Length: 337
Ligand code: ISE
Image (spheres, helix red, strand yellow):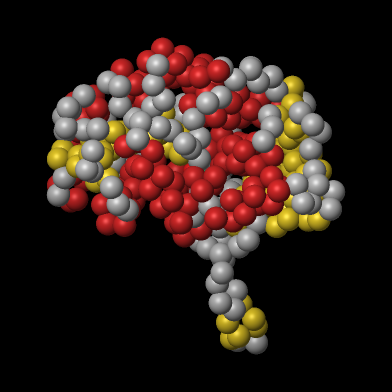
């Protein structure tokens, strides 16, 4: 296959950045069409990019000219479009979450296994961030001994624009840590709780912000993740791993320090698109390469399912203010390859 012909479903902000990224910066694949549940909007985006517009997502997914599908629709539409792509036998990249509910994720897992083909990748892009990859290599080298405690923070400048709700801190924001830390440590979680510190005056009406999630892994590694969605100072993602023989820190973007106005200033990113551009580029280049070879070598539907089980338990822990046990089923052989 010379070039992977990609169709994108869901033409909101992140969808448009992926079209632009793939068609101007990456190799071996091109987004040739897009669609949206709001058909007219999808067509207007297609026109802007000079690509084919469709009478809705199903028409795009089933077009024989489309080799592979990207789903960037709103979260509740992920499962139906991923299932449609599996039915069509096409590789499908789905932005996180695979689906807001573990039950729907399980349905996708079952459908993929029944198809007999590895087709689904979930958009947990942090696994491709060069900083997290360094941490993973350090842990896997064994040089620093076992990871004992992780201190993480995930601060957004202000995510109020998307109609933020208390539940989204776990389900939309810390879901990234839920996935990337499981991948870093190579083990599943055992229990979780979520506590509410004093609420910021900047939190949107009725929202609890910040929130602190505590996770314990099967081997007993203890993790705390602080989510502060309305931090009002920048986009700040930190991860410190205390190991038996050393402490590992996630590298921050290399901004030059400026001396000005009686101060030394080092900028902080404003949002995820500034913080993780390399991760997204590497993620999509890998996905294009693997799809052309009929492989999935990134986060699978199983990873998406497991993340959603853990997030569901964290949500229950938050709502009941109790500690909740996390029970992850045995990974099927299909996903072990
Ligand atoms: C958003 O959906 C993302 O995926 C960002 O990476 C995260 O920082 C933000 O909190 C989410 O709302």
